[in-house]
Image (cartoon, one colour):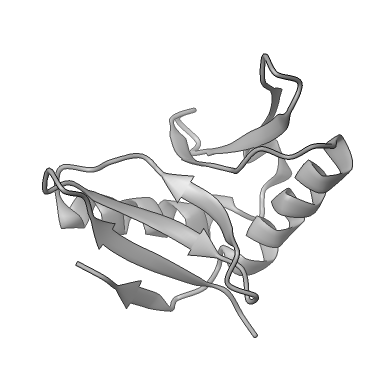
Length: 110
């Protein structure tokens, strides 16, 4: 099964999205956007940038967990991953975003 985006609205009225893998696991979480259109542009940016390896910023947190940010060409963060225990699992997460990030399916929860 292919992945999909879920678009939601926070309690304060802002919008955000998550990218889900085919198994339903969240693999990328966006920032908060003031408008629906901005969140939709964020999803479009994931589709545009997800296949490009140089767009992934690989990081390690202060508690020695691994994560990544997907960045646009202008170096703005589009979305961030969950925390992973190993670099290998982070690499698997990146590959999942590369595969599922092209999805046109959006489940609207607004």
